Image 1: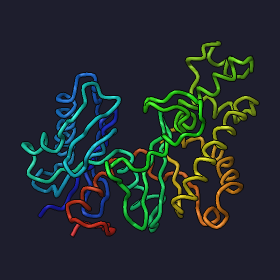
Image 2: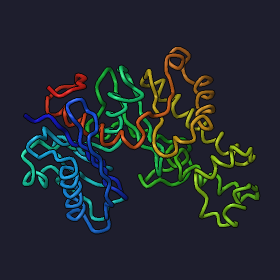
Image 3: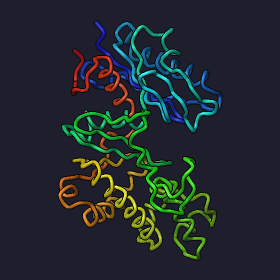
Image 4: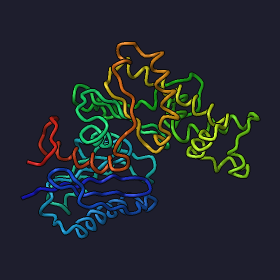
Length: 331
C-alpha cells in the first residue's frame, strides 16, 4: 500500500527533500547542494540523488510512495509540469520537470511555485490552519507571495497571480528586474532594506554597523540591521521603521483588495519579528479599511524552512486526489 509522500524544495543553493508518513509527519529529511551553475540536466540529477538518498536513509522503498511534490522557484505551468524560467538557474528555460522524472518513478510527480508550496504548508499545518482567506509573503532576496481566497489557492490566467512584490509603490523608484521600477520588493526585502541603509550612509549618516564592517558597506546584512536595532542604533531603528511602514502600505492595499483573515510573513527577513511588524501593524491600522483591517491578523510564519517540503508533499497529495478540500492524512 502506498502510504508515503515526498516533498522537494528546490533552492538556488540547496535541494531539500523530506519523506512523510500517512499523517504527514516527517520520517526523513535531507539537504544537498544544488550546483545550479552546472545547468538544468545536472540539477535534475541532483534532485533524483536527494530522493534516492532519502529513501535509502529511511529504508522506505519507492513502491511505498504515493506521490511527490516539488516547489520550483520562478515562472511555471503546474498543469503541464513545465518550469518556464527561474532567474537564479543558468539555462533554466522550458524545463519539463515532470516528464524528466517519469522514467525514474512509477508514482505521480507534481510541481508548483516554491512560494505557493510554502503557502500550502502554512495553510494546512502552520500559521493559517483553519483559515479560508490567506496571504503569505516571503521576505528574502526579494518578495514572494501567494494567495488563498475562499479556501482555494489563486493562480490566475498564467499561474502567476499574487505578484505582490511587483506592486508599484513609487513612480520613479529603484529599477526592478521585472522591467518596471519602484516595486515593493525592491524596498521590502532583505536586499531592499540593506540598500535603503546604504543610501542613508551615502548621505552622511552613521551607524555602529560601520564599526562592525570596518567601513565596508558591501558586508552589511539585514541581520546586522536587526542587531543594531536592538542596540538602539538610530539609523537601524529608522530604516527598520521605514521598511515596516512601506510594507504596511502595501498590505493595506492587499487587505482592501482581498479581505484576508490572516497575512503571514515568512522568509529569512521575517526573523526581524516585532522589530518590523510593529510598524507594519500600525500602518495597516491607520490606512486599511477599518472593517477589513480589524479582522486581519498579521503574523510570522510558524514552519520556517520546513514549510517548503511539507507544503510540496501536501500539495502533491491534493493534486493526486483531484480535490481542493483539506486532507490531513492519506486514505
